[in-house]
Each structure stands twice: as C-alpha cells, then as structure tokens.
Amino acid sequence: MPPQRTLVSRQAARPPFFAGVDLGGTNIKVGIVDDQGETLAWLSQATETERGGEDGARRMGQMVHEATRQAGLAPGDIARVGLGSPGTMDIPAGMLLEPHNLGWFNFPIRDRVSHYAGLPVTFANDANAAAYGEYWVGTGREFKSMVLFTLGTGIGCGIIIGDLLVDGENSHGGECGHIIIDQRPNARICGCGQPGHLEAYASATAVLKRTEEALAAGRRSSLATRLAKGKDLTPLMIAEEAEAGDELSLEIVLDTAAYLGVGAVTLMHTIDPSGVVFGGAMTFGEHRTELGRRFLARIREEVQRRAFPVLAARTTIDYASLGGDAGYLGAAGVARLEHYRKQVK
Image 1 (cartoon, helix red, strand yellow):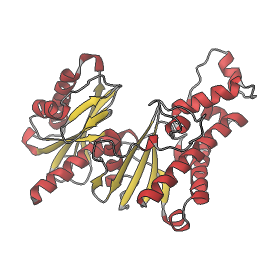
Image 2 (image 1 turned 180 degrees about the vertical axis):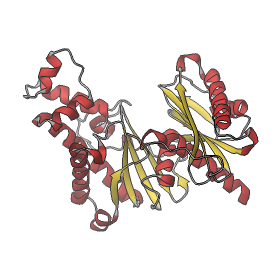
Image 3 (image 1 turned 45 degrees about the vertical axis):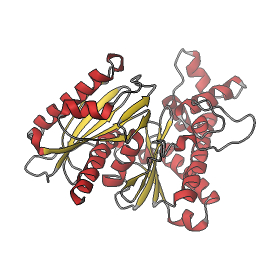
Image 4 (image 1 turned 180 degrees about the horizontal axis):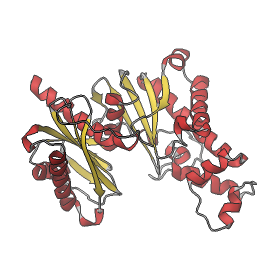
C-alpha cells in the first residue's frame, strides 16, 4: 500500500520540473515532480493496450500536458520526461522489443512519446525506474546502492549503484527474478520457460502453484473450505488464512520468504549493496501486519544464515515505502539525472 500522496503547490515546489510516466499493462500513471522529488500533480488512466502503441504514446503525451496544466505550469517549464516501461527493450534505441503484456512489438516508444509530449524523453526499464524512485526519495534515500525486488505476478528487479541504473549491455540488466536458485533436474519451470529461477518459487504465480500442489497432495488447510465454496485462490486468501492460524498457508508464506532470502544473498555477494528492498503487490501487509513482519523477518533470517558475516551485519533488508508511486517518481528521477548530466557536458 502506498503512503498517502501529498501534493505540493507550485509556489512551494523547487524547479526544475520533470514529468514521470509509469507505463503498465493495466494503467498509465503520470506525475509532475520537482527537483526534490515532490509531486505537484498526478493522474492515471487505463492503458487499453489493444489500441496499439501509437495511440498509447499519443495518450501519454496528452497526460503529460494535462498533468502539467494541473500543476500550474506551462509546457516550457518541464525540463524532461522520464518513461518507465515493462517488457524486453533496447534502451539506447528507445525501442520496445517484445513486451508481451503490452503487445506493442518493435515499437519506438521513446521517440513517439517525445513527439506527442513535445519534450525530450529518458527511457528506462520499469523495475529500474521504480528502484530509482525508492533510492531517490523512498526507503533507499540514505543508501549509496540498492536492489529492489518487486513481488507480483512475476518478480521484477532494479539495481542502482550510485546514480547508475544497471541496464546492461543488451538492456537486460537487473533481471534478478531469473537468477537460478535450484539446479536440480526437476526444478520448477519459470514463466520464461527455463528451470530453477527465483520467479518460479517466489512470485505470486508460484505461491498459488505451490499451494495448489500441496492441497492436491492432501495437505489439510482451511483454504480447502473456502475453495469448496467457489472462491478463487489468491495470495490475499493465503495471507488471510495464514493470519488466522492455518498451518499450510503460513508455511507457504514463510517458505516464499526463504527463497527471497536466497535471492537477496546472491545479489549481496554480487554487488554488495547498501540495502535490499522488497515492494510490489505481494508483501503481506509489510510492517503494518504481523504476517508482513514475520515475512520480512524470515527473509532476514535466511540472509543471516547464508551471507558473508560483514554483509549480513551491514546490509539493510527492508520493505519499499513508495508503493505504486515508485514508478512515476523514479521515471521523473531518471529524467532529472539525464537533465543534469547533459548540463555538465
């Protein structure tokens, strides 16, 4: 759950100003953000992917104009737009390649959004954009480097080192949902088709599959009663039953945390970040609930058990704090980065 969004007035805001666009398969979010990461205006609308990439780019440009107007700014007041998008991409070329949840294949999204917004656009992977948002104004604002895991249908990941987003040579950097945590011949198959990936064990999709397998094998659970009444199995249902004392549901949640702990240690041993942060839709209430606190504690236990002692003692393991706002804030943040870099050149 995101924090309560507070908008600052034009008078209280500090220029320069940036537009952040968070493109998702379901919704597009746009925010106008000042130099300190404060939001002046925010709006959202359905992505409607079936209308195609060109229409989507047009509407994103229109949303930037509308949010600018709502912020009390003129179009010329916006220094740059940041765009965070899912899917495989070629970041230097500004291209979406095969974004299956959008269907906009081989689409020059950066340049088309720039055309409709009438502004330069910085293009980023959505997970890296969200990670930069947390690094800039969220949980990681005191960090020098950070990893963000986003837990949902799949597992997204963003890596920030200094002011560097780890995009990689082929724009596939930070795909840490696909690190291998199980090399056995019978390892679970990830949604990408490969065996043994973290996403195959700790995503929401994997949580449901592991629960269904346990129930089919005859494990006793209060979940069976709810399912017999025609309810659909969801991570929320599993969380509710875990909180109510159901043994299987709690086991599923805590085993998921253990897998994520393994993933965290892998990244800690690779880049030695200041912190590893967890966000997304499947965080079981975070610090607000007993289950969320137990979930994080189990991740930390696995880190303590597996990581080098210095890293285990010094690396912060915590929840993200920006919720669904991380995407547009981070997109605005990467636009801000490029704005200042171009001024130095």
